[in-house]
Image (cartoon, rainbow, N blue to C red):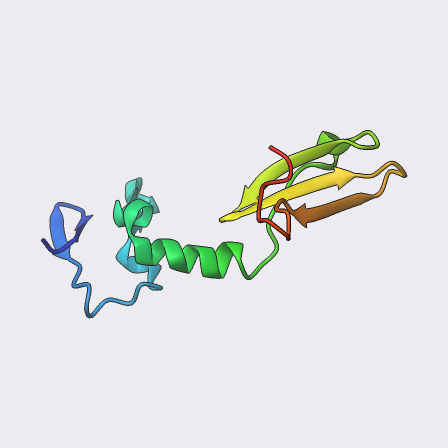
Length: 113
């Protein structure tokens, strides 16, 4: 079955072999004057789009990790994931902030949950 994108009342087929996965116009129907904003379901389930999102959003640019107020006191920490990468943000005993990949480099085990 060929994926489709519904634009207005017309269904437009998306031909996978000819489409540019980076062209957001293929996945978003945004017509503010008509009060329409829809996202195609492939945005949430397509493995190729997922890989592009990881590469261009989570693996190649700055990302929000936590608020400073979440690790207010010395020795506080918070864990999160940035894309597929588990991250640990800490405030050390001297009050300095730091962030690390939340994995033991010897065995690959998660450090904090």
